[in-house]
Amino acid sequence: MKLDFEEVSVAGLAKSYGPTLALAGVDLSFEAGTVSVIQGSNGSGKSTLLWLIAMLAYPTRGEIRYGQHGVARADGLRGRIGFVAHQLQLYPGLSGHENLLLAARLQSIAYADRRATDLCEALALGDYWNRPVRTYSRGQAQRVSIARALLHEPRLLLMDEPATGLDEKSTESVVDLIGQEKRAGAIVIIVTHEAKFASAVADRILHMDRGRIVEPEG
Amino acid sequence: MNTLRAAWLVTLKDLQLELRTKEILTSTGLFAVLVVTLSSLAFYTDPLSAPDIAPGVLWISILFCGILLIGRSWALERENDAVFALLLSPIPRASIYIGKTLSALILLFMVELLLVPLCLIFFQIEPSGVMLPLLALVFLGSVGFVSTASLFSAVGIRTRARDLMLSVVVFPLVAPALLASAVATRELFGGASMAEIQNWMRILGAFDLLFVSFGVWISRHLLAET
Image 1: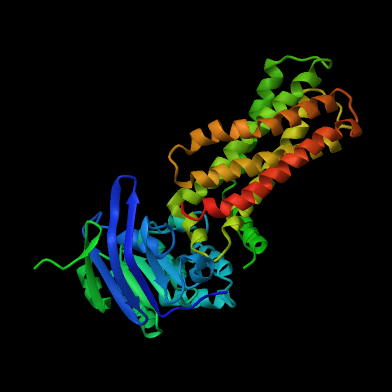
Image 2: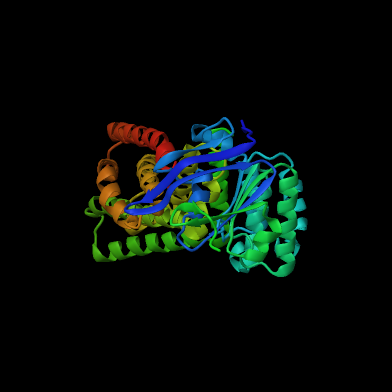
């Protein structure tokens, strides 16, 4: 059963990879209908934060809450999370269509075909729909990855550098889609280096440095 | 979604990928042909000594084809970090292990359907009377081997030493099943009946049950964080 929530909060969140401290105690909360953008230099812990919130890694210490639910209810919560990772997590041997259908079936989405087609139209995926993903450009694969993250109308949308490889027109359509998700009540958390993209979508911008949330310089 | 339904979707995805590329079947099939051909030429045999050598050749071929096949199957999951598409889905973790094991088993059976007749032909073993019990032995031996190797491949998604782990951990673990399979096959080729090799089959059945159950139980913990 899919669980719902209106807020995601992290408290004292820390993550170490061996001797390397990737997150050094982060306290934050994210509310429904808001877009939060996280910026920071390479290795500042932005992507680690997303991976922990996506429940793809366990924190070394600290806690993540999805409304009233903790990570112990992961199976029910995963059906409400969409994730666009930097590595696109698509099967290169399958077409964009097959990747989306696989995700739709694993998410138990009724009318999976209809939903996938709507998203493809919104992201202009039409022409290369049935070719294997390994023949796609980075931008084309990025759009499939974004479509997959939106397929099940997630409550929590996590995006790691979503504008990478996209041309101006595609970036605009992604900005529009993020706006739609926000209006539909999604909690959107985006990691990006692109200032123009960030200012186009963000309700608030957070900065990270050496595993902590910091005040922006200047 | 229930575990078996999700596992079947994972299996179908693997078979669909293989149908598209034929990469795994081509490489392991050619490897199997090569091993059996070279062995039949290297161990120049007469009809009397052939039944003693054929079981070793058959099971060594199955072992290496299996390792090749399972390694490639999990390598596809690591490409583009695609396995995280499965890990992000609201499906039981065990279903990923079951699905990957089932697809590897189906593909290995397809290779074995080529391997077994080749072995019988090259080592001049009369197929009538041995074919059915031999296929049963190959089935039981493969289930134990694939379920164990898949489990450690799952562990190795993010381990750099995954190949080392396969050879150092999996080979000793599956040794009892492989020994039982090889000895039972030798008995069979030596003229033993189905009833006479039933004890070996029971041992293999028990090994399969143990490793499949253990794999299903432990995989939900092993795949929780990769």
